[in-house]
Image (cartoon, rainbow over all chains, first blue to last red; front, side, top):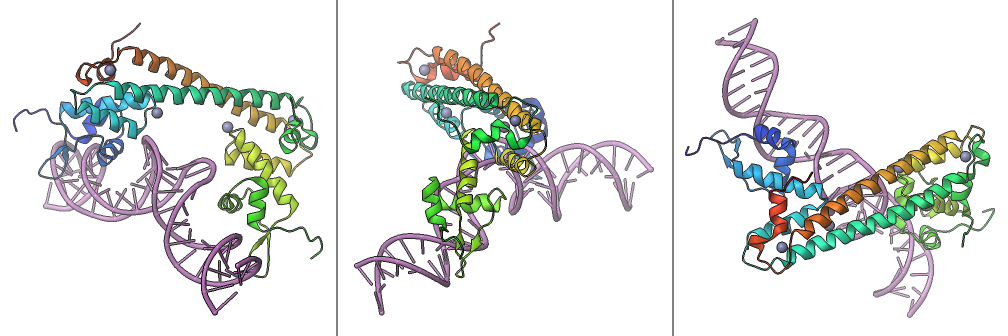
Length: 140
Length: 140
DNA sequence: AAAAACCATATAGTTACTATAAGGTCAATA
DNA sequence: TATTGACCTTATAGTAACTATATGGTTTTT
Ligand SMILES: [Zn+2]
Ligand SMILES: [Zn+2]
Ligand SMILES: [Zn+2]
Ligand SMILES: [Zn+2]
């Protein structure tokens, strides 16, 4: 054993703040390099695996999909190509997020207006909310 | 056959603008009343089923979950209770949507700032985007 | 009669995990 | 020494709301 810094999956999990199953899952998905195994079959991780995992987790917090992360990792393996692909990926992702925001805002408006059609304190039978969903008035 | 207005699943699907599998799925989930069957086993739907389906679809467009729709439908079956539960459901849902919007906006800001760390036209090796994800600078 | 269109059920796939089952390994304890 | 507990292994199923496929029966059209 050259550098005696290996850890087992539980320690890595604690280090990164993630569940052990998630680590195995990323390995299975090809996002995390398969670690060496001890004689008993236990996974043996290095500092590098910790960095890979942290990278993946940061990407996930940016709501990048596993496929997108896969792409980013593949770019990292060809460091002498132009980085325009990375920027395209990011631009597309930003535009996805903006689309989501826009449609959620439209949804919020609809919901607020629906909510306004009930003055509370009624019986369900005459509740404006259910009535509006069942038979919406058309607003210009 | 008393009122000869029954339709088969394909016709109902076309009427509502939905796939036949989705109709069967809603029935299986207990959202749509099970229709009568013809002698050959085919489902036989009435106008009422069309209205139920339209209600469900409108709820889905408001991004209400199937569980929430289930709740709404159960309220409809007890029309002489106060409608405050409906309003609570809606208020909770609106607050969910607002939470989503807020966190997506925060995400958008992060992504835009990340994007700004690359001036394009570089090699991947020196791309500020990957560098930032791997090793983020701390901003106040 | 044969082909096309429709219906039926059951099952698997999607995303990113999370949870469970069934069992092997290791260190500490009774 | 036997057993407990914590840890590890793999494999499989569950989540949400559909969507797609496989396989086979029925009806309608050509
Ligand atoms: Zn994206
Ligand atoms: Zn009301
Ligand atoms: Zn909701
Ligand atoms: Zn770049």
